[in-house]
Image 1 (tube, rainbow, N blue to C red):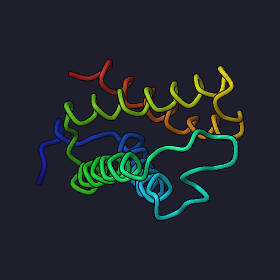
Image 2: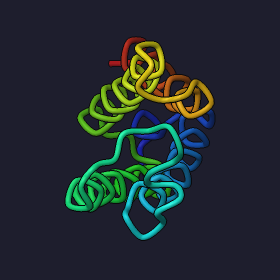
Image 3: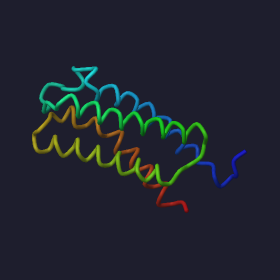
Image 4: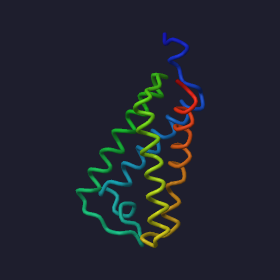
Length: 128
């Protein structure tokens, strides 16, 4: 049994399960396996190699988030990386939409990542 201080709050565990699912879907849609999602209309075309690299990292992080949620054991290093990655992705999506490199309908797909990144940051800022 885990010590009480090693357990995570229910809202954090739920958000990690959600981000696991989000990352698994993201890994699929960011891979060149799904061309309609990989290059939606109005977005810049990227080489397939970039898609495979990005999707493999997204999948790997999704597995790490799922493991943390499944074992109910927070890892501050992985949570800090999750916070950084989620906020960076959201800002990149919003930024690229703001400068006209992709439609806003594509850019707003970063919103769940923004919310999750803020949640992870909140947990890190309010716990030791």
